[in-house]
Every structure is written in structure tokens, then in C-alpha cells.
Length: 128
Image (cartoon, rainbow, N blue to C red; front, side, top):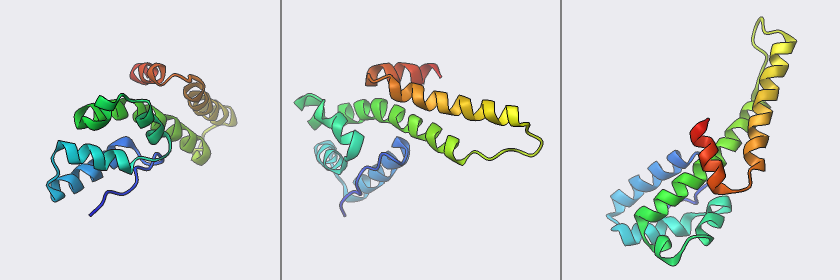
């Protein structure tokens, strides 16, 4: 069975766990895992792959390490965006409190998106 496409709208952890289960079931070695994983990437994760050296692209542990660092922060921005869009006023929450909560979520999401540099995003994520 082939791996599903890596979906950047789903957390890095969920995608990776699913891939590892499939790789174990199929008995793939690290070389096969690297190729299967790399070819399952799309969207922002595929862009990350294109920035890696040839050695990192074919070394499964390096590929996983780099993608984990870079994709986790991309997902964090999406989390804040979804939290903002789905936030509902709590019982007893004042309008001012609601506005402050929404503003905080919006600012976090926008701040992460505006950083640009993936490395800087990783450093900020570790500090948050």
C-alpha cells in the first residue's frame, strides 16, 4: 500500500504516525522510507523538500528531522487561524474579553505568518 499525500492541514505528528505505521507494515528500510515519504509530500512540505541538500533528501532520519522542525511551525499558524475562526463566546464572557481573546489569536497567527524565515519560525515556536 502507498502512503497518502502529506496534508499540511493536518498536524505533522498525525501525518508522521500514519506514515510510520504503513512503513512498518510494509517492512520498508530507511532508504525506502525516505523515497516513499519524500514522494508523499505536497504543498508547503514539498517546498521544504526542494530546499534540502541531496544527502538530506535521501537520508530518512535527516529528512524527518528537517521536516518536523519546519512543518510543525507551519501547522501552528494554521491552528491559530482555525481557533480564531471557530471561537465562540463563553457564557458570562464580556464583549471586551471576547475581543481580547480573538485579537490575541489573530495576532499570534499573523505574527507567525509574517516571520518569513522558517528557521526564525522554529525559534519562535520553541519560545511560545
